[in-house]
Amino acid sequence: MANIYWYLIPAIIGVGAAAFTIYKQRDIAKLSTFLVFYLFATCIAWLGEFTVLGFFNSYAYKTGIYASPWAQNILGHLILNSTFYPGTAILVAAYSLGYGWISLITAIYLLFDYLFLKLGIYEHHWWRYYMTGLAIFIYQIFTKVWFTKLNKLQPGLLRISTFYFVGFVILHYPIPIILLLGKQYYNVNWFQDMYLSSTMFIFTYQLVETLILVFFVCVLKKWFWKLVPFIVAFMGQLILANLHILVFQDGWNLFYTVMVYFSGITIFILIERYSLKVFCTSFANNK
Image 1 (cartoon, rainbow, N blue to C red):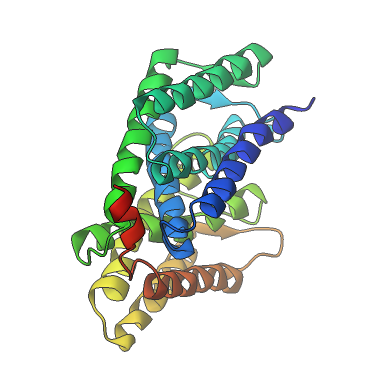
Image 2: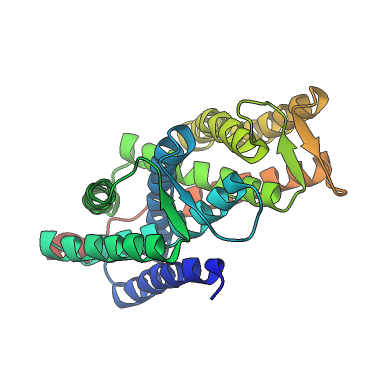
């Protein structure tokens, strides 16, 4: 079986776990709350991956799709950290699973870790099994606690912080896909590999850009402030293109990139407007 199909197995499990949990537990939280939490949990997984894989080259995904090892890493990261991780996080959080169940889920992660290593489709550099176990265990507990607080009406820092993570996922997700499709890249030469340099640059860039997005959408309430993120996105990409940092390929151009940005910002504004508004009393009573 081709490498990529093995990666789809935990991805399907994650998405299936999320769908099943949202359906069965639909009385404890609104669908919009589950969506926000899924995106939040995705971003937490991404930040961990950005640190241990991007900065420290701790392991390698071998999806078998690209010649570049870092293109394979990006694809493996997108598949697993956008499905398996947030899917199990929703399962643990919505059912308020205890340490025993969390330990079992952690063991399943370790089983995949072991299986992928034996199949030769995943490789440890300095990473070790106990690191995987510790990271997964902490991740599940942290996201579970966050969901408990998130599912209550708490306007203020918690809500704004949550939407920062949500906004980052929405802004960033299309960019590595466009990169992998060979449509554009960022010519910064931070690292020898173009895929790694592009990803590390835009990841860092959008961490700052998301601060602007959240401030003008979530903090400042007047409608006209919501125009600022659109202006910032357009000007930022225009400047990067004029500096020849943003490089287009295969018929792609600035208009397409800006439209992707504008779509993401619009989606974020709609999610922020209609999410995390109502306290769910049934969940609080169950607690």
